[in-house]
Length: 202
Image 1: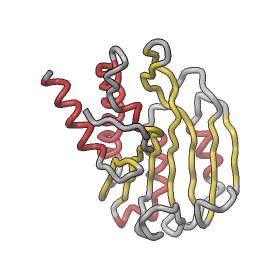
Image 2: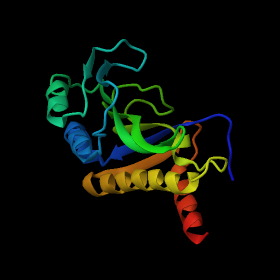
Image 3: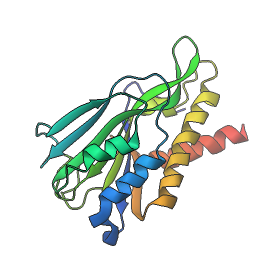
């Protein structure tokens, strides 16, 4: 079993087909309408608008109460466009998490639409980086922890939620390329499929 002391951040990066890139905000709306936002009691949601690069102070940081209303979010986003602009929605979706027992509770997630001239600080140059991005937080939500009773079954449920979302986005968006990877560059999609297959064999 692969085990780490240090957690990694997990991302889904989506590159749209070339002819779809100019309408990336319309495809971001599709992502927002497909995303399974938590309907449970949750912390603050925030819309963040940045320009030029990720080190610049935000043009806007607007808190919103949840559960999130997509039409309300789109109304705010409509006022901010431009090829050097990034739109981020910091929100929640439900995952099984262990405290004293396993409970289905909101987990932090960020949905982003990146303009082609915005520099998000990644290894890619502006113009080559992804158009849409989901930041899922720490990868531990999707890794079995043998020391915790029931971990394999509950984590498998989280993995299935993640892969279901990825496949739904594949079907709904003109995807040229996508990567589900950790901050350290690990191809996480292949690992998840391997874990699921392994758990079904056992």
